[in-house]
View 1 (cartoon, rainbow, N blue to C red):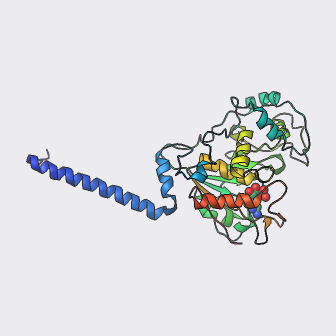
View 2 (cartoon, helix red, strand yellow):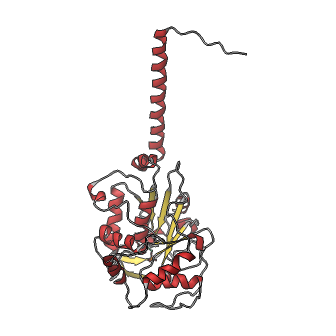
Length: 327
Ligand code: C5P
């Protein structure tokens, strides 16, 4: 049966157009209101996600703009592995125990083993990628952040931070784990390793794990073999490490902590960054949710206080959301 539409006089067309415009404006208004109600923190980020870019065009402030470099090399790959002389000298300067090795020859062996990775390969163009960065601070104990952490698309854990036995407070999902040889652990097949090479021997260790398995010691004992899916290996670029040290920690400490590197990495590859498990005890000690160690928060390697204050500043500027925990 054909639908009979009433014949409109020309002046009625204006009313129809007006009615349609009002409907569209109302729809847009209510959609925004809903977003404000459900996601009131990330209002500015929504705009960024509309850009469908991996490193979103965030709301700019002078402080942020002076630090954030959208084009910095995040990952080492077969086409960007050459290091400038100043970068090479900064990076080699991090080594405590001097170790001579031919970097160029080494990276030649590296990339046939690990396919080049794009840090955003698992992002979706129509979806805002949410990330949880989970540090190892004792302030996670009793927090019950687990379900909130697991609700994010990516969950990035650091060094040996365990989930087993702490699920209620830290969650159980892990999509990325950031470590270096001395803090390495077995990963399941779906987890990305974001490898943090603080020295040239670390790159040799990674190659050794997948080939000869002969490296068992750096400045301490390290595992000669470990379970890692080689298709999921990402290697932080020394340029990125230096960038974090110079731009974000402003040369405080000798080099950034693995956790702080992860926060800035997430800022570059995620649309929303939620930070958990960072911060010292009330008397300024570096503590863990999974053991009893207590060490000074600012130590000879890392400027824990400065990193913490920078995360708080990023929170105040709405570039990430920091969850302070309970203890
Ligand atoms: O102790 P660990 O280095 O394994 O912790 C992982 C990261 O969590 C650190 O690199 C640091 O950035 C963060 N952390 C923190 N406060 C603590 C313990 C760890 O901010 N009390």
